[in-house]
Length: 106
Length: 117
Image 1 (cartoon, rainbow over the protein chains, first blue to last red):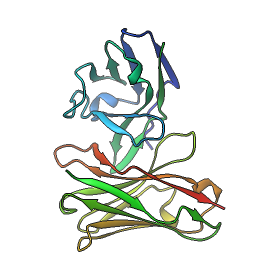
Image 2 (cartoon, one colour):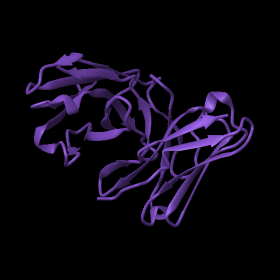
Image 3 (cartoon, rainbow over the protein chains, first blue to last red):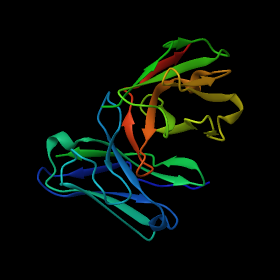
Image 4 (cartoon, one colour):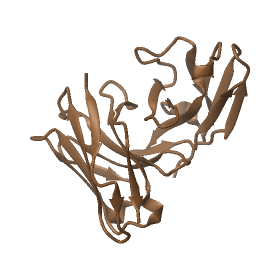
């Protein structure tokens, strides 16, 4: 079965740029989606199909996907961006989530 | 605006069946895939399975032998039944919708905690 790998944690200074990766074999050939989950809340879709932002998601959130790595980039990080982030793909009609990355804003 | 709401017992005894329902409000259940996802305390997201409004399903192989997901279009609801539960099934259970224009999950329920004890 297909697996995707995320770093357990990423730290970023306030106002700087955070990058969260999602690795998988030839993941560039798949559509990668990203979700933000704050404590006690349901996940929220922040990027779909590699690069697209749903309505209401700030432009500071962007995505890319190539080769074996997809990346979620958060520019001008704010304290309110602290959360767990999950990447997700589809593989042969099955849903695959990454293990999640905890983003800390210092 | 479409909203999802999970409902069901918050406490299930070991070896019994966990039953949850997700009610779709503000829109139709038709023409979408509907998903169940769970999250054990302090852990990541786990896909459980999904159902199309027509009734076709696909399950996580690790749960397939214990799992039934169904849809009731007349009530705008879909449901999950997980049999022979153990402590490992304790989690927050989320229902979600797969978007029509792409295959991400664009709408989620708030989640419901299920304890096995």
